[in-house]
Amino acid sequence: MDEIRELIQAAAATARKETSEEPEPAFTGSVAYPVDCSVDRGLAGAIAADTKIGYVNGSKGWLIYRGYDVFDLSEHSTFEETSFLLLNGHLPTSAELAAFEEKLRSYSQLPPSVIQVLREMPINETHPMSALRTAVSFLGNWDPTADTTTVEAETEVAIRLIAQIPLLVGAIARLRHGKDPVDPKPNHTLAQGLLYAMNGEEPDAKTARVMDVALILHADHGMNASTFTTMVVNSSLSDMYGSIVAGIASLKGPLHGGANEQVLYTLEEIGNPDNVEAWFTKAREQKRKVMGFGHRVYKAYDPRARILGPLAAKLTSADPEMKALYETAIRLEKAVTEGLGTEKKIFPNVDFYSGIVYRAMGIETAIFTPIFAASRISGWTARALEYLGDNRIFRPRAVYTGPTSVDYVPMSER
Ligand SMILES: CC(C)(COP(=O)(O)OP(=O)(O)OC[C@H]1O[C@@H](n2cnc3c(N)ncnc32)[C@H](O)[C@@H]1OP(=O)(O)O)[C@@H](O)C(=O)NCCC(=O)NCCS
Image (tube, rainbow, N blue to C red; front, side):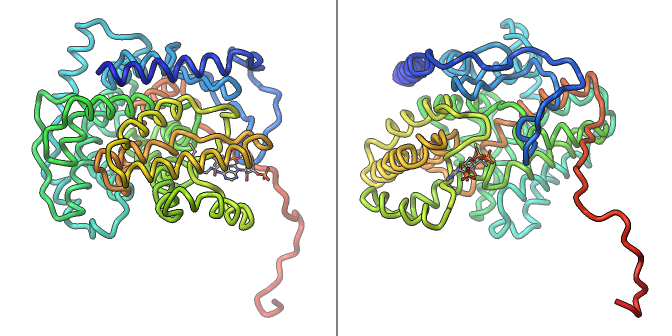
C-alpha cells in the first residue's frame, strides 16, 4: 500500500513543519493532588486522572498513543497491534501479537441470540448506535464473568468487545436493509472483518488498509466525553459491559462521534461546491455550529484530519459525484477556517473527512458513528482498565446556586 504510506508520510511532514514553531505545552507531566486549577463549564481545564495511555497536545496538533506518534502508527501499525499497545503499554513481539490475534479470533462468533435481539427491534427505525448499545448490553447479560470487576476479568471482556463490536456493527448495517448477517471469516483482520460484516463481500486490499488506518486514528483521544463516561461508570465497580454501553451512548451525540454523520448531512444540504459561501454566511447569521469543526483541545489542525482529508481526496477522485462532495468539503473548510479559524482557532476535526472516506467506500451515513465505536472500544477499555488498577470512584461537585432556606408551603397555600 505504497500510495497510502506516502500520503501519511506527507501529512506527517506537513504537521511537523507547520507546528514546529508552536510553544511547548504548559503541562505535560504528572500532577500532585489536590490540583489547583480553574475549571470552566463542561469541565474545561479539569484534570481528572493521570494516564500513560495517550496524549493530545492541542496547541501543537499532536496525538500520541503510549508514546508513539499517531502518524507513525498509521503508517506502520495495524489496528490489532495498536489495540494491543493501548491495552498493554508496549508494542507486541510477534509471539504476543499472534497470541492476541488468536484470542480475538476465539471471540469471532456472535451468539445467535444477540442477532435475534437485533431482529426483534424495529431495526430500520432505530439509530444504529442505539441498536449497538442494546446489543452490547445483551452480550453482558450472557457473560457469567460480567460482574467480576478485576482488571484481569475486565481485560478479557475488553478483548471480546474489540472482536465483537465490528461484527455487531456489520450485523446492524445489514439487518437495517433486510439482509442476513454473514458468518465471519477466521483469516480476516479486524478491518477486513468489519468491511466483510457490513458488505458481505471480500474487501480489496486498499479498502481494507484505509479502514485499518481509520480504526487506528480513532482508537484513543484523551478524556473525551465517551471515554470519561466509560471511566466514570467503571469507577463505581459496575461492569465493563455497562461502562461500554454508556460510552456508546455518549459517543452517539452530534457534538461528539455523531458529528461524522452530521457532516455528510451538512454537505448534502449544501448540495454543491458553489453553494458553500452562501450557506456558510447564513449558518453564521443563525449562529449555527458547523459539524466537523472545532475541538475542546485542538487549537491547531487535528492530525487525524491531516490524514483523512488527503485520503478522502484520493478515494473520491474517480467518481464525479463523490468528487463534488469532496470539493464541497474543501470549500467549506476554507470558508470556516477563514471565517472562524483566525478568530477562534477552529479547524476541521477527525469527523469532517472520515465520513467522506466511509461514503467513498460505499458505507451508509448512519453507520459512520458505529464504525467510530468499533475503533474507540480500544481506548475506552484501555483507559477504564488503567484507572481500575488504582480505582477511586469519580465524584465531582457542583457549585450550588439555588436558595438554601425556603419555608415549606403547604399545598393549599400554593
Ligand atoms: C467540539 C465542540 C463540541 C467543542 O465545544 P467547546 O469546547 O465547548 O467549544 P469552544 O469553547 O472551543 O468554542 C469556542 C467558540 O467557537 C465556537 N465554535 C466551536 N465549534 C464551532 C463550530 N463547529 N461551528 C461554529 N462555531 C463553533 C463556539 O460557539 C465558541 O464561540 P463563542 O466564543 O462565541 O461562544 C464544538 O467545537 C462543536 O460543537 N463542534 C461541532 C461538532 C463536532 O464536530 N464535534 C466533533 C468533535 S471531534
